[in-house]
Image (cartoon, rainbow, N blue to C red; front, side, top):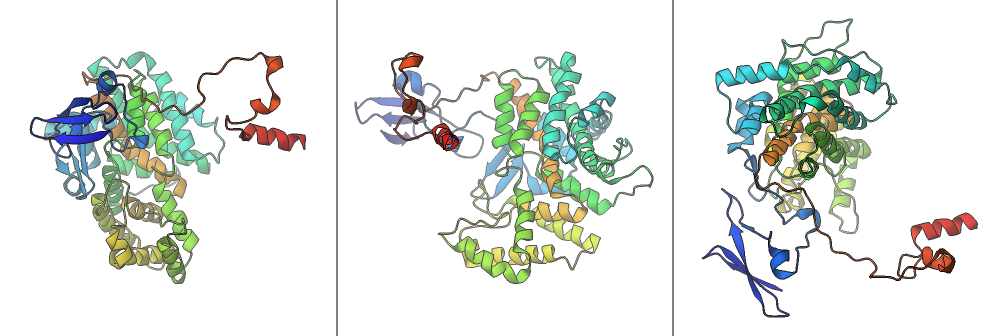
Length: 462
């Protein structure tokens, strides 16, 4: 089949070379960014459907929340650049913007901050959920379970068709996520839970709930609080990534928002998504010392070696990650504030950063340090264990998830998600009764080769 783009009348001509039949597909224009071919009627009109593993060339929805131009290194929320938001706003400003489409006025800001602050506590019975987990459970496993459990506490007050109840659910999720994340950390180290403090900012509150103990007064370092606020801003939303798409897909069935966000947390947990900053720290530990860096650089350059340097380059950005510019500055501020100068891990990271910004191999391929490279270093310096990195990512991304969930619910074009597939299994087969089925046939994969179960069965018999 051949394609011909007809931009004059805003249609796309699709030609079936086998029959000569031509089909006109509408072309849709967004505010900015590439055009989209409307294939909603493709199967009905042509008998074909599109094949796009990973949906890398398919728009699953229209959205007015976030725009990314990976080629130019642009990330904007509701039209505002991420660097401007990180410099001039706080996290709750960005939350309001993502949820409601505009930056808040002074009065709106006051009311929104008040609402979030008053929802930070969790039901006392929720604390008993933590006792069902082993102490060494990964905090993300706890987050999936506990956030999903919120559905049971607010089941009667979460009518997704009621805009007021949708708003309250969104506020509850944004407010309670730092509390639950801090509780997951405290549980893992055997310390008592710390209640939220309504006199503190969102970032300050999270730091206090994470690191304070009842027997001592906790003083929040303003540099660290601002760094945490920026980390949350930079992770607030990133368009239709895996976890956001998961939340939308779950929500398309009418599931409640707490269950939808729990599904997003599960998706984020994957090392290819939210676990990247954790992987950066593991990479630095593997390298060990600065003098071993050339060895790992050569491995990364060797096309026959599948080794990858973590924290460099990005799936979407083919230019410098715009979030990394902000995070790099914040990283140096935090390290200076904490007086960290003689850390082997930091020495390795800074040398890798220098190489990536100057070495022709990395520059030519645009393998610049990304946001995960710097955020991992910052969080480690602040005292967070690596298994909490993705939890912090989830806290920041919650507003993006609920904003997309809210947008999807309010979209007149919403449909339950139902991707198609290209079936490659057996064709129709005649059913045989149990006594006529051959043993070998039942333990092959359809091509005469033994299936995994067949191999295991053979090993068991031997």
